[in-house]
Structures are given as structure tokens and as C-alpha cells.
Image 1: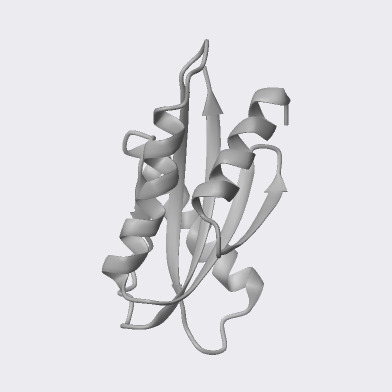
Image 2 (image 1 turned 120 degrees about the vertical axis):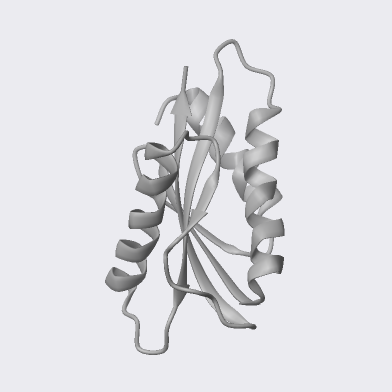
Length: 120
């Protein structure tokens, strides 16, 4: 990740304070949200999209996000697969947005998020 990428990652970490956040590699990251309704998760997930879009930059920077409800018994691998499927739906349908995995979220759900930062 280049210097701009670290700056963007720091911005995401700041706006998602209180959530577990990890860089997965390259420009990809993961965030874990717990105990939120789908509506609450949407409000939190929209924060990095808006924040990154509004960052001053010589080149446009966008963020695409995939969101997945984690079922009891889901492994970390399964959670990442579901979130990645949603991430690629975001990228295929216009980028600079978030998309939920096909499965519905229950109230108070655990939610896994993967995202990818795009530069220029």
C-alpha cells in the first residue's frame, strides 16, 4: 500500500472507531461490526464511503465495500467469502458504494465487511 493508501486506511480506522479493523493485504481491509440491526450497520458502513470520497486528493479515491451477515457457526473463511462476494458485486455495479450479501441480516446481527480502496 502506498503513502496515500496508508492515509486512507487511517481515515477508515478513524471513522470506524469502536469496530475491529484489519488490513487484509494490498488495498483490502476487513471490519467486524457486532450487535447492530441492518439499518444501524448501513449507517456505520456509509461513513467510510463518504469520508474517503471527501478526502482532498490529487487523484480520485473511492472505496467499494461488501457486507455479510455472519450466521452462528460461520468460520472466518466463510465470513470473508460472503463479504468478498458482496464486494465484487459493488465493484461490478459501479464502485464507490457498499453492497450487502444476498442473505438477510437479523436484528442484532454480527456483520463482516470487506472493502477495497481504488486510487486514480
